[in-house]
Image 1: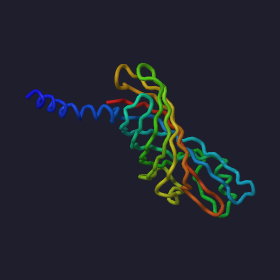
Image 2 (image 1 turned 45 degrees about the vertical axis):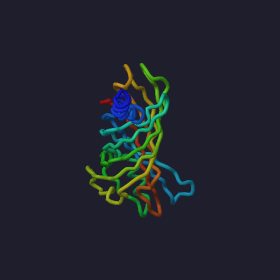
Image 3 (image 1 turned 90 degrees about the horizontal axis):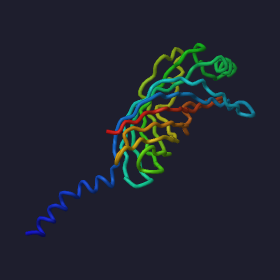
Image 4 (image 1 turned 30 degrees about the vertical axis):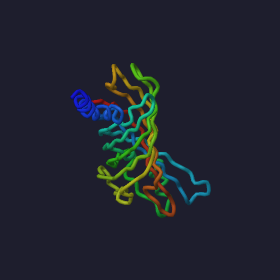
Length: 215
């Protein structure tokens, strides 16, 4: 009888044991995202790159962190972010010099691209309790879900998806077993050419400042 009781107790405890080993926690995230783009003039001999001025918006999403190991874990996340760019006089002048160039719109305007992204990040951290620094890196996949404030309709020519990478660093505040909040900074360059023409190519990039709240 005692053996049956012990066996039943082990069965009841097994899901909690697996959960503690496989899932470290989950939560929501939000903050500011600065979107900008790099325009490469492919018709020029040296292929100059003109950085876009940063357009600030917001980002919000949710995450799940797996592999509850002392220093290593895996983060899966999905988030919505407002990116785009701020149109500069330099961009307008450069586009007007290209026969097949884009019309970026009026100087100072801030056309917006709305993306939903999926990301898988490998996370390394130092420590388990207190203020725990960490770094993470991994691929992300962006899907265009909306456009706004685009009088020149330049975004109509952009691709509907993008592939890039997230490089992040931050600090977790861990009072006991699970973090309470995290503060994180990110850089997310895009690998894909979201616009490609005989005279130029354009790639997305963004920076983010996030607050992660663990639930």
